[in-house]
Amino acid sequence: MKNTLTFLVLLLCSAVSTLDAQQFISRAGHVRFFSSTPLEDIEAETVQMSAILDAGKNGGFAFQIPILTFHFDKALMEEHFNESYLESEKHPRATFEGAILNWEDLNPTGDWQDVVASGNLNVHGVSQTRTIQGQMQFNAGSWEIRAQFDVLTADHEIRIPKMVRNQIAESITVYVDAVLTPR
Amino acid sequence: MVRFISPAWFVLVLVGFQSYSSQGQSLLDALDTEPTAHPVTATFKDTRVINMQSNETPGAGVLHFVIAHRFGRINEGAYSLWGLDNASMRMGFDYGLTDRWTLGVGRSTFQKTYEASMKGKLFVQKSDNSVPVSVTYYGVIMANGLRWQEPDRENLFSSRLSYVNQLIVTRKINDRTSLAVVPSFIHRNLVDITSKSHDQWTLGLGGRHKLTHRVSINSEYHFLVNGLDEATTNSLSLGVDIETGGHVFQLHITNSQGMFERAFLTETTGRWLDGDLFFGFNLSRVFS
Image (tube, chains in turn orange, red):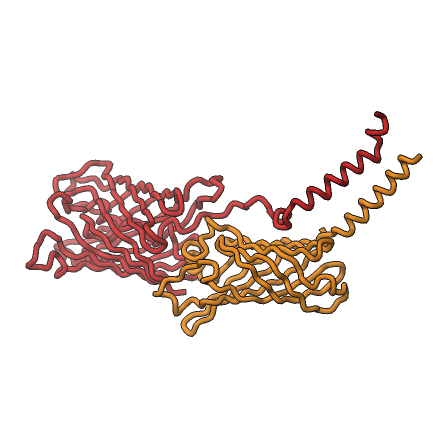
């Protein structure tokens, strides 16, 4: 009897802890980046970002972008991006891993709320500690997330030869949005 | 003893293990999936290795323009500035109908030749080696544009035509090195002496090795399967590719002066050992 009781209590605890550690995930996040110079605008997109939010762990948050899935309008730009700049065979993914700093203050309401994420952004195999501003809202059981931030090519050792320096911006603006559903 | 294996203990151990393992795991691990196979890109820098076609096509909606020169024989010496006085020229326009299929036209000063071509990727190498090589078809019809040697007799337009069909088998071995094996079938409607065959086969080998992201060294060789007659030699070319954004410069030394397939595959006359060679370049530009 005593054993059965312990068993039930433990079962309850484990159920609570799974609920507590609920994770939200997306496999179809949208990423767009933009480089603008007077000579040329360069833009690329993917809808294959995956992202995860750990609702139980102080808002742990991570995303991963398969670089080869970025699509450019111009085939040659895509080739140069993968071959010469991001070296996508060597560094197939860009990742972010960190936490939503103000996770405790968020309300699961349908309003967009400002969030600050802090963690490591890895692009081209080079990691940088970043604090990124974004917005989140809880809508129909899912967390929606959106953010815009700049990536400096020099920060991630993406070498741009002098000859094309006036065609590729030093600072690339990245837009991220995703709907994370319960895992 | 019995109490040790009671369900409660079992669950306790299980829960303990669960929380332990989830703490040791990074969130990124949860996102990791099997990498999906993707088509291999950038096997060669341009649509040609040097003279011969590579597996590359311009891509849908892209116009690829190439202007190419082969100068005179280097062993002409200083009087003609090692051949630079005498340039032979080719212009070509290739348009990507789809990412895989391309139509092209070209015109060479050599025999005032016009070309119409079609190139298509039949198979594309995959990163997981489920398709180990790319196979590309190239077909070209060439029309000799010179005035008839004997205008008084009956001359047929079909006599001006010759055809080349190729399969371009390529493999990107690693991010620097790519190889190509290119069997070609050449047919002429008219041959200059009746004892000559209308049909010829060649087997081509080509490769590139990247020195940096934007510079590679290239080479190609074509072996005439039917054998050589006295005047002809097998085509051998060495070159460098330099890429600058939308342009690719290809500089090379070759023993073939003709820049269309029939000419460099079967009508090469230069001899490497005699310095009987041509300096030349291809300069390509894409418009999209």
